[in-house]
Image (cartoon, rainbow, N blue to C red; front, side, top):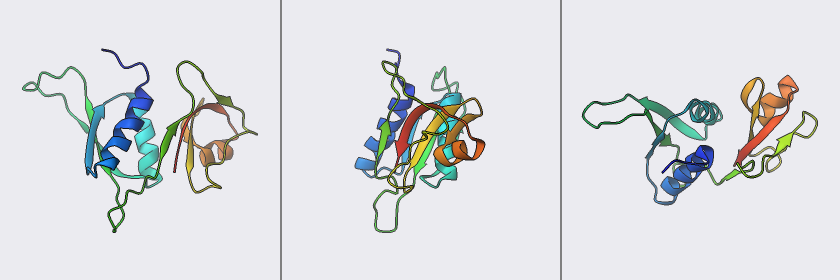
Length: 137
């Protein structure tokens, strides 16, 4: 069965792994997911991510991504919440003057712009708007 919203699937897979205190989660690969994970790694929400190569033994058609979740010393996850804002049924766009602020700059908004996928700070720096993909805190 095809996935209709791969970004929401990525977010829910990460939240499900956090709820059961898993160190790693494996999701399907795509360029957009890789770019989102690159930003999450830069912003220190995740430790790192790896692109797993296709394997002949496992008969996989597609690449997979293995994500290492970042936890604090007391065992709590660094990620408190992730929310998908723009959905396939209702797209949400913002211009450069209406870029959202997540929890008074404690969280991060993810935007898909003509400059690529950017955080809210990056979009303000380049003065571009775009599709408001989601927010993480």
